Structures are given as C-alpha cells and as structure tokens.
Length: 328
Image 1 (cartoon, rainbow, N blue to C red):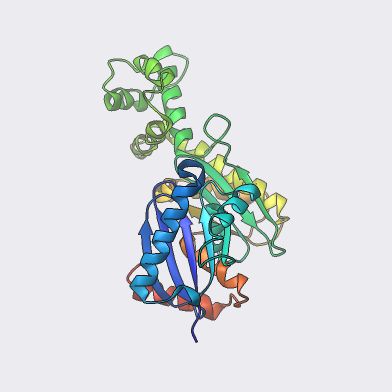
Image 2: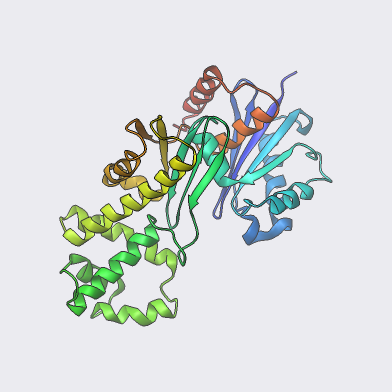
C-alpha cells in the first residue's frame, strides 16, 4: 500500500502545498491563501491548512489515512511555543500526531540543498540568512526587521537611495541621478518634500523597498552612487553569510550558498561582493539557485521524519517529477 507526505510552505501572501509519495513522485500540488500565524491567528490558519489538505486529497483521490506525515513550514512559526500551539490546533482532526511545524525558513533551507548542509540568503523587502552543517547544527544571522537591521534587503537599498538623494540636495554628498529619478517617481518638486511622507508613514517600508528597482536602473546607467549602494548591499549580504559560515565552522571547507528572494533577480550585480566576504572563510565557495522551492523542502523534512532516506535517487525523482509537471 502506498503512503504519502505533504509539504507546506506558508507565507504572508500565499501558501504552497505539495503531496509526494515515498519515492519522490509529485502526486499533487496546490496554492492557497496566507498562513502567517502571527498575522491571521490560529483559527484562520487551521481553516486554511485543512482546506488545502481537503483540496489536494480530492485532486489526487488519496485518503487522509494514507498521509503519514505533514510538515508545515510557516511564516511566524519560528518559536517553539508557537509551534506547539499550531500542532495542538490539529489534535481533533484526522491529522493528529502527523503534523510537524517549523518556520518557513527551515523549509527553504531543506529545499535549497535537499536537506544537506549549506547556507541560504533570503533577500526581498527584508533580509535574513540561515545555514546548516553536516552535524545538523542550524544558525541564523540578520532578519531583525527594518528598524534594527535588514541590511542587504530591498528596504536597505531604497533607504540608502533616499539618503543619497537628500545628501545631493544638501551639497554634502556627490551628485546622483537617483535624486531626479526619485523626485519623478514620487511626483515631488524637490526630494526634501519626501520627509513628511516618510515620518507620517504615508510611504511605508514596502514602498521604500520597491525603490531597489530604481537603484538597479540607475546603477545600470552608470550612476556612481547607485553602483556604490548596490555594492554595499551585496557586501552586507556577504557579511550575513560569512557570520553563518563562521558559526558553522565552515572555515577552509566547501561553502554552498543558495540565493532566495526577489532581490536576486539582479543577482549578477551581487555575487562578486557576496563571494569576496565568503572568501575570507574559504576559497571553496559555490553560489547557486536553490535545488527546490520551500514546499518541496517541507516535504523532504516530512519524508525524513518517516525514515525515508534522502538520497540522490530520491532527489532526482523529485526533480524529474517536477519537470514532467511543467513546473521547472
């Protein structure tokens, strides 16, 4: 009799479900609504997850009693107390005893390297870095939010761009095309008119993070200040990864790094700076895209829990199955 696992990657905007058999064949997949525990709360989270389970099992015609393990990788579920609370939500369901919970970052880390060792750098609106070594030790660096950190993020780039434009206006910084471009973007006569919008939060952190696109645009046009901001952003991302590599004792060993998030659509502008920082730890650095998306990482962690060996054959089967489904 065949048995299956479900992997879930739940974020602030959407949730991805995938159902695998023990050989790594992708039997079904589904997209749902947000399942960030801190934002929507337990009641809504339970409803969304159970709705996803019902739909994916209906699609695949697989009964719940054949699902041996479910791994929920959820945003807002990084603390042990939260994980225990989420598991308890399903105690009165047919999935009782089958649910594992951790943060979405753990699912992303498992997916990036097929549960093997390595470092992921995640950079979008915010930025954070996670890594795992051969002994299973997991550490993080960064991710303290835009008020206390998020260096290397889209917000960081946008914030630096506004400061550079204001310094240009003041005459205490170099001239930059960013000034006129930001004035145009926000429909301002002069860049200092942005000040009340920032302090009254009429321009929020997401809108500031979106300015990264303008920084990339100006850097590609040869603006020296924009180029400096891009390099500084890459350096900060490299510092995040270097801190994780040091904590994992990767000195003079192979360091595998996967880049995740919207900022890495322009990854060619960052890789040299990231590499420079990591070369201080080891010359053996490999930077790549993740092997799998986080929902597959969650499914791999579920397979590990039921003592399925995560080997090259299994990983190749998953890759082949994803390719057959037209997802890659």
